[in-house]
Length: 265
Image (tube, rainbow, N blue to C red):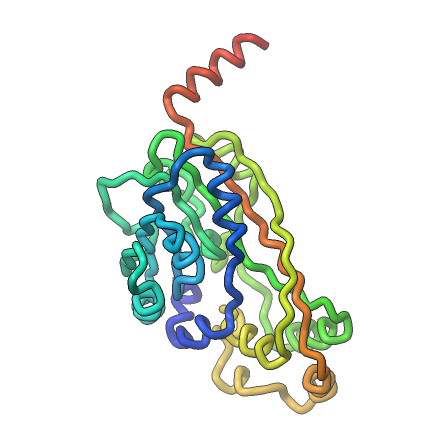
């Protein structure tokens, strides 16, 4: 949780440099749901990048954010929208309400792998939808990408499995209470500046866990790579296919239909 709560120190920069999500994300989730989505629960809302996207469509979003400083920005950026920020972790959230949609935008890997699937099922209405998506960003320019990769190899430690808890569609597909798991990519390309790329990298948790000295700037022996980054005049083109993964709450009706289908085989 220490690493997962490291973003509050740069909450304003996070809001400034993290790329927004496309409207197509909501369209795809609504299409998959095949039913009206009135109430949603967001896991790890951050500064509200995805919160605003769903709330702008009239969906009432309960936005969970465990970091108080991030939640402060979330409160400001979602003002006037049907969104209710709650400063708590997914695992500690208590409510009697059930939601049409539970979703996480680049945050599901911070949840507890031992309980997250069952917790999502518990919080969904019968037939409700769990949607997970992110915003991976890879530099299209091979020279710039190689320069950044070279610096990262020297300054970033390897991620520890105990710190970040990745997930897969296979896990979702076998989770009790979830059915109809599906995955798709929403293609998108964003053109940004080199300065904004550096600003975004400075909001990545792996960098935030470095010492202040290590985060201050490239060391002399990394000078060639950093100069190559700075001398690219045209900015950076970032292909951003948004991976969207969803599953449906297995209601009693669906359970019966599934049993009948199995008997017919």
